[in-house]
Length: 139
Image 1 (cartoon, one colour):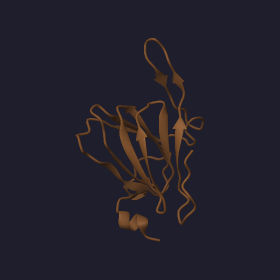
Image 2 (image 1 turned 90 degrees about the vertical axis):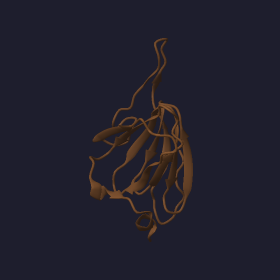
Image 3 (image 1 turned 45 degrees about the vertical axis):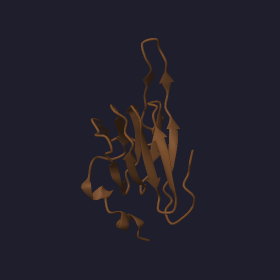
């Protein structure tokens, strides 16, 4: 667990190990709401076919929590809570990055064939997003 230090925001990020069931036929990983993911899952989405040198994210959520998983390939997640920044390399589908609300995230460094899977605590709502870093960083 990597909590953000105290500051004007209390938002955190945490690496979460998910169950892994190895088998000669391949590995199975899964996540259950309120068990491995500490919230009810209201939306699941994934990003794939990401061109080389592309960045994703570039926003924060006002109240939605998310679990980000590299379902295939690898990529970097840069987290910022307004007082602390940290980067995570995701490359294992049995490990996810739990993001609390008010964490600015930027994703990049996608490998060929990468799939970014996200489990979210709320449905899509454009008003839920903070897309301007200056607004995010304002006291």
